[in-house]
Image (tube, rainbow, N blue to C red):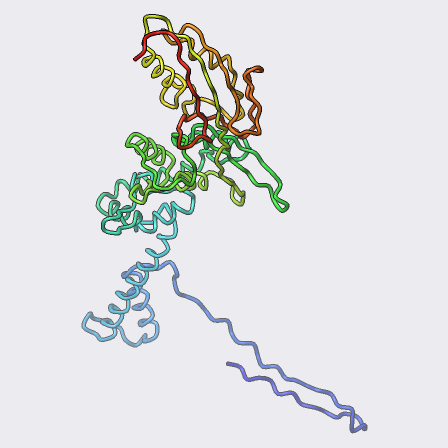
Length: 387
């Protein structure tokens, strides 16, 4: 290493206060030569380089044998360098999807481009032994590397498919595709700092987003699992009785725009209150007509108030009620005595024949005495046979 230069003062004139500061700089260091081949990566290359270096340093020695201590040491060094070089190459290869060989690295790299390989393989968390879905996926790939190669090819292709919710209509259309959603309506509003998307949903079986202790039938579970597999999402953990909001949120988060606030909310149910008088033909029993009216105005399959049949803000017309009841065999005439929204503040619309609903409202009529706010109707049957 060069020494630091020492400055000196020279007083050339007669003035004792005037001097010149001189610094003698050392000669620049010679350039360091580099005759090492940095492309050497294996045992043979490292061993040959060290042998050539020994021969250059000791030109008077003309014979080298495998038993010489110098040769033994160079072989040991070359072996260690070969192992370190291989380790470096392996570490570097794990950083790229094309060359990664470790299942954990492949899974991590696929997740960086938004591809959920575990969900695509139909895996879910194992609640019995606490094994996570990622561990199950890596163990599966270790047993069958061909599956990992398939995911390696499918992952980059999946990013070219546009699944994002961009416009307001996209949010409604994409949410409506979920098996648990019957109708969806989306709107945007200014929160004071940013735009917020609000999605109002009509859900399966007229349930609510945060309804607890849900009992999902097997056909619904199968439909939801199939949908999640197609979308590359994790399968639901049914053992924990998830709410519908819990089931919808992963799908929404995987499709919404980054940084976009999205709020899911239930539709506003409007109970319909009706009173009907029905004239029955002479050869029908009142009990069978009562059951038929309950079916045609019920919430079951094909019923007038079946969940999902009515859309947001769809007005209820008395003519539709007449048509539904008059289509039954044995019904001779129908009179609608009361036709209104639930609540004393709302007037009877039997004369106008129309109940107007607002944009986020949905008409319901469960005819459940325990929940009159969700609509009910009374029947007054005349004629026919009693019983």
